[in-house]
Length: 399
Image (cartoon, rainbow, N blue to C red; front, side):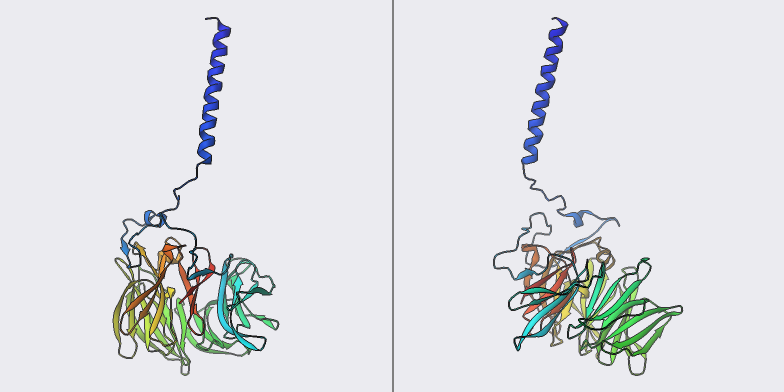
């Protein structure tokens, strides 16, 4: 065969192969990807060695997220309220046309802008466009007129805390504030402030400049809750590696008394009359929810794996509403959840802490899986609000 003919045949062959490969890859790119690349990610990712997986008794027996429908149902009780991440939110009673209207106020994390939503009409508007970039946390007073903005300082070495009244005065708070807790009526707040010798605890009104020091400690790792008018509960910062304790600080005389201790991975949530303490304990199969009777010094298992940080007390001080994980992976809690190594897909329950009975309200895994945190209720407890830890968007659940 002549050399010229061979060259032509080889060229034609290469051309045909190139065309066929091009057609193949084009068709493949048009084929929809039916496999979620992140499906089961948290079940498979295990940097600490062998993990355990616990089915927590939700409405579904499927313990993976591979086939979850990611659209809200037509008659869903879940409502996504924002398309952006929020730094904090609160419910309150506003006045419109001389009528009392249940409302929400919340702060956009990226800009610090404040928004308001009327819950009866869902009409939403921006009520403050003062820009504070990168707000990590916001705390509203009871009237939702004053808000504490918390964000990283310019050198990222400390947290800046800024108190502003909507349409009014504003001021910087101490630059070394580690933690903030609201009083039961949300008119005051308690700050844990770092010093050269440890920390001090200071109370302050939203409406006044005066502060009162009520606490001092060489130990700095405290998580505060202003449980009742005269008492602040201080829980040691948790880890599955250490035993934690919770103490009662008497505001009037400054005395500190131990309530509960020697609990691995201890996290807590007190009710508003100071009679009961919801707490989580890190066990071999994950974090377990328990109730502690403060007066009788007795503890009982509530029969659910979960974290108090994913719960809120009802106004009756008996029932708690919780976002409870369908599946627990591993046992290094609450560390792995705090660090974002583990994310949950929650079902929502109401637990009677006296009878230990629980009722499932809804399961997000049946629709768009959410990891609920920062839970709060509206006044008549017809709606439960929460922030989805997966993307920090604000949601509500009809009760």
